Length: 324
Image 1 (tube, helix red, strand yellow):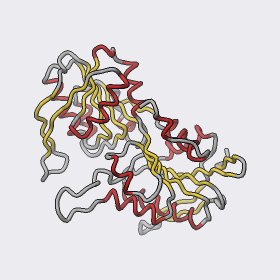
Image 2 (image 1 turned 180 degrees about the vertical axis):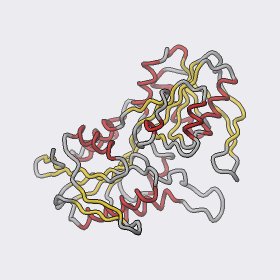
Image 3 (image 1 turned 90 degrees about the vertical axis):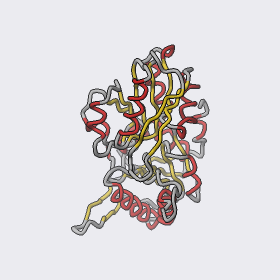
Image 4 (image 1 turned 90 degrees about the horizontal axis):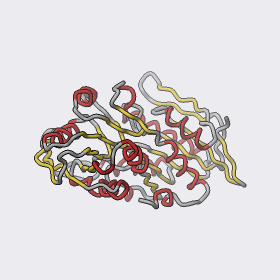
């Protein structure tokens, strides 16, 4: 299957870095194109070499790379690939970032800290990106860090519809794991017709990934609670939130998150948790590799492919989520 799709005088070409080839192939299949053959390898000192094996001159180029571990390597590879497309005379370069690295560093909490999410956006722009297409940013404000169009996609329809088909909605309560996720949890409530609860937590500012859960706001006793978050990293926050729900009488807890980062102790924490199911999308390649029966991975490829079509055909990406 060729990596080129033409519409009138326009030409779409689809490229992928090496971070998550399975997702790239799935998106390409949805688009009815192939991934453009690319020669990429690491030199002995760790430097990255990239060369495309087809001409990109005059094409609308879409480059997908998810910022998975080792995150710094794949971000650098993406910058090099963008630069190669710019120097190959691409007509436009849309960077698809299913998981945007450094998104949690979106503001200064204390003096002398960086705003790394802004830096990543600046690097993409400097490299030559015209547009960013991403999924469930940690905070909406990151869209303003890039000097150009940003298409912000949402996994909520995929995740919420899956949960809604499995659980008796009369018993369902949507739970935000912290105050920052309430707006997203509210959208879940609207879609599923369920009440909202909130887990109040306090984070230890001097210890990374340390959270103490204090109380649950809302009635969860005898309810099936679905905890909704954008990402799960080490699993400490979400498992502590689930424990708080069970302590307050929840009948069952299902956890959903767009991005399964799952670093360090996450595997053991998820395995030992009383949570009955963890539901992720495949924006990152790790979730399914833990081989836990309680992990379900849903495909984000159809959502990304639909957005790529809208961009290529000068349509409306927003229209894909008008029901939200």
